[in-house]
Length: 321
Length: 289
Image (cartoon, rainbow over all chains, first blue to last red; front, side, top):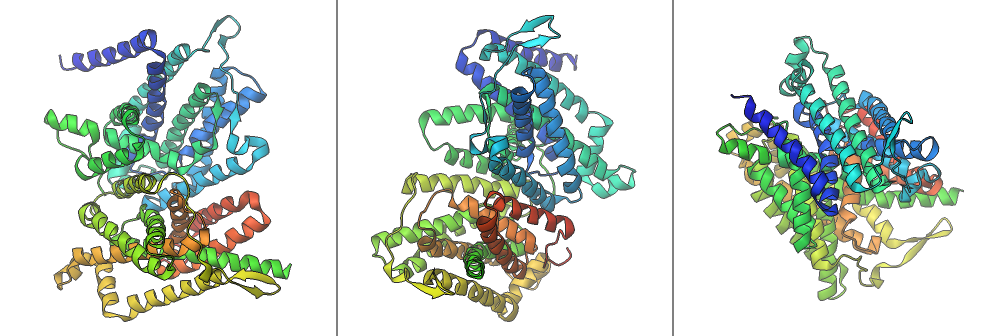
């Protein structure tokens, strides 16, 4: 009995996501695509922050690597979206491997500052290498070609409604992968590293390599989100790599709940919904978002998921020093 | 060539001094309270805007603006520390950073609401606009004044921390909070005072920037806080001496970068930051911690 309810719940959510794709209006579809992109970004990111306890300020760089990787590929080689996405993910993972190699030597504030430095290096390169990246204009005019499977049959993704289902597929796949990762021995070792790196080291866990692996994995998810956003908006922009964009998955994860699996997903829904609602009434979205952030940090560090779990009797959770 | 290099160095020194004024408060607060304050750039911005407002309503006496503007910012700093920051000292790093980040969002937006979203041009300050001829080219006197203010602030801070009774108490509380409390130091009140002082330093930097930058925008705090982070990291987090040297290095490097490699000036500073962090994570002057 105990296992049927969660399974039922998951099926309900998937069914309603499909329902939204089939029946809702264009604006709602666009918003849901944005929610899922942010969800993929934050879910991957939270493997690093919530699971391993490392605060990165440079994941915008991997997001941009995914976006520009897909952009270059589709403009210069071939327009196939799936190939482009794979190239984008590979570019992001490679960049994360290089940057991560240097960054995981440190922890805490030094790690954060290093990721900030590397992320902004990528930003400044994109910004200044005008001939290659288009500078502040970014890469524009990236087309959404139909998904062709070895020329056998083609699925068009031209309209947002068609594209929605591609994003949904990647979203569900990402969620499943991250869930499996968190509950694997690898994921448990990461939580061990967060709680006590020294003891994990003594227990035979290669802490540095684990940190690097999770850094690359989270970078790859950022790349996937970036590649998908490029397909959605048909452009790649330099500000994807800026530190203020790197802060977004942190805010989203905190809003939803850092230590829970569903936190980043719930946070993404909240973030996008809140922005839409607040912007209806006032131009001062940043002010109100700041206030919400203050309230969350001062009183509800478990995030939305923490509050719900608190109501159902489970204890509140937060990151420890 | 020589003329050009001399002027690039002078320009770099004056930029560096602004970064130092912001980085000094940031470093002091980090060294004593252990919090890396994202909102410190906002205090710089608020310092500039309040100074501007004083100039606008009380006549263009720059020194009066420089006195009153930062004091207003101190009131805001007090509210931030006393009612929010104080409760997160014991929490993990992400919460502290995000709390101060929330204030960045709030202050940026409030500035847009109060002073408008466009950029502001400060009133004409004729008394400050002279220039002096150095090696065959004119250089603004005000920039020379800034180059002089920086070391004076550094000297004042050094005397205060190393030689005064207050400095001894601050050093004691920063090296061991519990022990200082046990011998009768009111640590929470002291922390509030240190935070206020750091805020004041940042706001003074903003006030001094009013005649220098010529344009006030609501994004000016974010640019300088990243530069101050770089400087604080290069010098060693928590080390005032390091922040001073770091600010000079970054100021001059940026000036040379803009003059000779305009495409890579931002890249140069970040690569320097990364190299220092990898080679000496405690910074050039940080102790081993």
